[in-house]
Length: 124
Image (cartoon, rainbow, N blue to C red; front, top):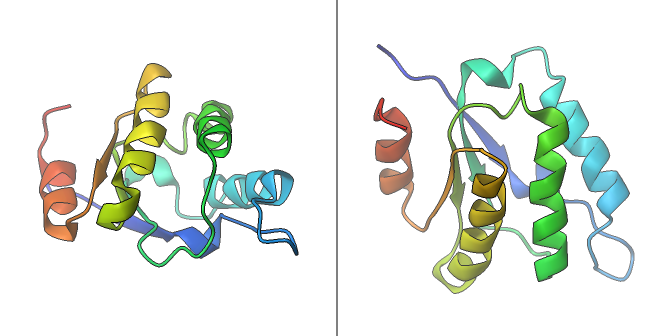
């Protein structure tokens, strides 16, 4: 069975304040727009590509964003691979753990190929 994959880049949902901090309300709105997109995300596995993200998130920001996924459960109900640079792997892993606690299938990766391989495997 073919796997459909949607790539969401960090700049598509991570919005910053003038001071360079996460603008949580604007980021939440961007997540709502992604969830309501004409192509339903519930038909796609997702790669959340944060490799070129300039904005660094605090532990609280990561926790809050993972918590926010619960409001968009249908749109993010399939597997989500968080692709990140090696130096941010711990942060991506923390985000994934916070999402897993809320019954989302999320894993962190530094390799695009490993992320794709995990997404196309039918096991959950």
